[in-house]
Length: 257
Image (cartoon, rainbow, N blue to C red; front, top):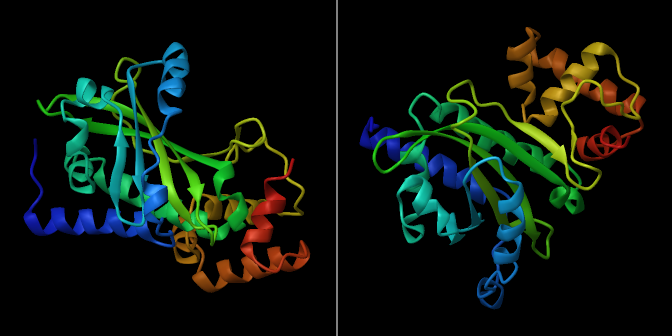
């Protein structure tokens, strides 16, 4: 396995933990003692439908720790469930995919703070990337990630992830995030054929799609060759003509079909 320099490795781990804990909520002890009785039932059902071997893990994002990792994780990647940590996650990601994965983590954090708080549990994020198992074999892992539980302040305090080994289907490619509305029939929110209730020009629709992906105004400006000032102007115009006071309201309208 290719090793990152110690400084680089620690920086990546700290970055991942920061994205996990950003705008999340601490759970009280009684909540942390939940034993996930429904996990076994869920795994039996998913096992009949899965396109590859899979495992489930649950993260406490505020602490940056793993509360649960299913035993299949060791079968697939060779690491015992009790060894999973942010450090191990960074270590396992293929070096050529690591920057993309960290960028996706940031975009998920950005997206979650732009939507109406009550609706955070309505969306699922997916992407696939390469990981190295305990014997340095490459696996292509398709990851589904969603906020399983919100705290009193409607901030995420439990995240559930479903990791499926799809090596038999593909290996490689640039990791790209997709966002799905799991409340309304698993609609891919980045599907250009999806109609929204907003009044948008082609350029404004392009900017909205970048916002959904978690891009900042500066990120969008860099991506489409405009100045940040121009992007901010577009954003203000979009809000004004759709009678929205903020991006959360805008997203809520955009996701209505």
